[in-house]
Length: 202
Image (cartoon, rainbow, N blue to C red; front, side, top):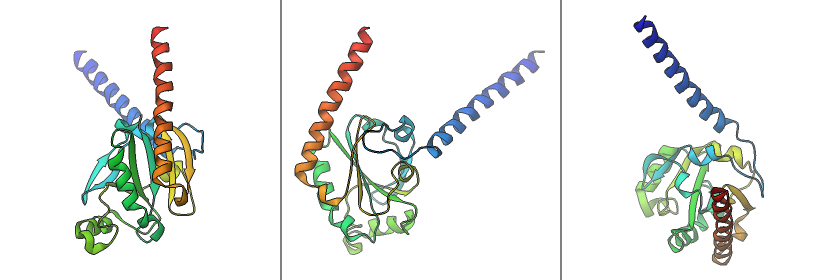
């Protein structure tokens, strides 16, 4: 009788674990396109993506950056307009380390692969702008592409606290506009935190 109970408990635990995993997978796969003013599902921030950091492939999520201004930059290695903006992106990331998270995203369908991009990063300046990028970037992405489908590159998405503040092209990406968006992000989070504080008191 005790053995039967133990077997039942093990099976129940396995069922629960499978349910959680399947729920997470479905959550990622079922992300519908999100537009300006829309709210992103939390699973998008909690799910780990393949990311190249100094040429080494890792798995990283945006969970810790949820309250920052997140700037997603969809790009490809053959996109000259994308590569021209990399020095500016690196500069503004250094300028606003506590308020801004630049997320370079190379999605499926660009013709780039994790291995080819890793090789270029390791080559450094010899590989051109990609080798000198100086920022980590997501590779072989499907999740962000699902949330923000697009036809042209570069394609920029501005997010704070899960809310999409803007979707723009390269002409909007200037130091002045980044400073404005960072300030908008700070004000947005002040309002959100005040609402949370009121809710906690109630």
